[in-house]
Image 1 (tube, rainbow, N blue to C red):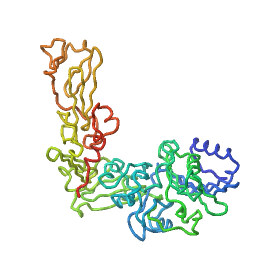
Image 2: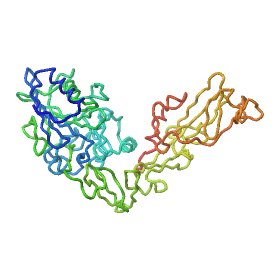
Image 3: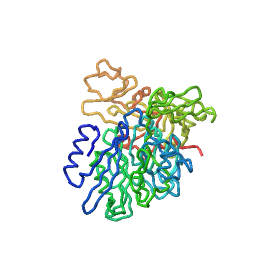
Length: 496
């Protein structure tokens, strides 16, 4: 048995697996490229298995990700080997379930979103996503029900997915915790089938593509639980199914290495693969990132130039944001691809990575507000703006962050004190030189509620432009409406 150089923790895990069962003795490792290693595992016994898996080091600059674009006949609706050949992939595996050749879940190939909705409206929130940015930052996510781009955009944009495929169901492993997210048409997890899986080790630096053969002698296939156990044994921290059964096919270094149960690879809606650059593209100033050259938007991943487009051809400008860049929709407020602005009392417009969207805060009974920290939908009690701090009463500190209102009652022997743009609870004896003094004649805030001060907005405590609110924000306010949890979505609704 050959085991390529691996981290000590990984070797320890593998040693434990091998010692746990003699059936795992037929593990053969083959180095494909530095940082890309292929495991072929065959087992005997009453339920023999034939497994092919590839472990990829995503931290290497020459490693790039590549999912299918919506290009019929070359990347969409082709076999895994055809996709791999057409994009020059070193490793490739089948992607999502599909309705015809339209993926059920999220599909992004080389920066291009396939569609703005689930192809099957009945799947609700039961589909996950494997997505990666151009820096090979990959995640496995169980996204909430998404039926339109105005829901997709605020979730995708912060992740900056450049390549993504939907998964068969939700996650099987989430931060190391076993879950039951897997569809196979069986009750009680009793069916063994060919399986395709994708998983990430803790920290996200190592990715696995896994193909489990089945429906033939010497290859029993696996149940969902057995598949999850396999991923755990390989050291995975997050894991999900891809399209399995007769669709299971894994391309490694020039050939399909498993034995598809149909006898040959199926045509599939989409795929995801690894492209390996033996030497960096001279046009890439860095392994991964995006930048503007005038109106030209250029993107590199894995040391390869993967996009070279002209924003001006679409009537837009190119804008940089740190080590990222994007074309800016001309409708973006102030021409800023990350801008947000109020339209009247309740309307809101915003752009994320140059993508324009608009909405109406009144849908949730909110107004739109702006201050020095930004613009967002906000609770009507945020009198000084969506990001502000003030005393709501002599012993009550009020604050707003991205429009979410929160109150904090001061303890015994304390009172609310507003200093500059902040408010806080202070001890009654600690305010000799403050604007709130023991001498009520000189105090801006006294025990008399009629004299409450309303200071200027506070510095930002969150990204006001994102309109994002989480459950902790809502829980903090005693009467914060449920609608506040959806501010991030409302603030980016796409214009029809």
